[in-house]
Length: 158
Image (cartoon, rainbow, N blue to C red; front, side):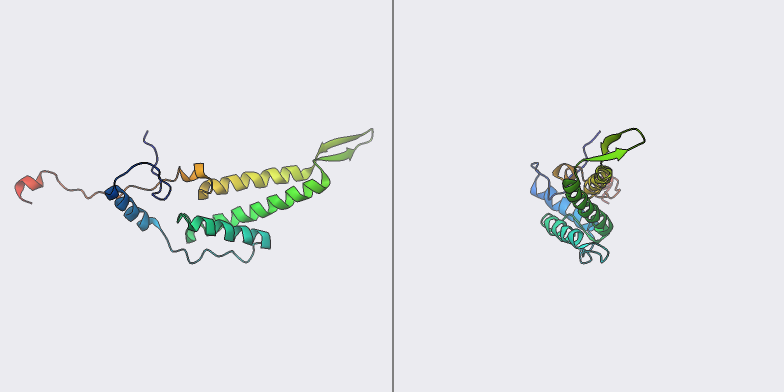
């Protein structure tokens, strides 16, 4: 099975100048406008700050465009809630005490489950966006469509 192609911005292999130009041309056809990458109004302040940070970092390698807005917003919202849950856990502690008819016992604090769910959402969104280096290396760029020409036409003068 062939390895998926990498974006020219993250490619580290040795390829010729012609291949680089060809791949830049292919990638430019896939890019959409970037002017709409602004934090949505429903994001909290910490989430909006994370949104701006992610977008500015991704601009350096030309990774995001307007079609990524929803996933970036979900990622940033999950990140802000994860941080909030972590801060609350630091205050409360990881264990919670419960009581039944006979005894008092310790259980895992419910915020641990909340934190775990947001961590999972963060990982899913970051993989889709290519925010981690290992995820960026898996990004696939479709090959250029080749024109279907008969290779024997050149012998016939056509």
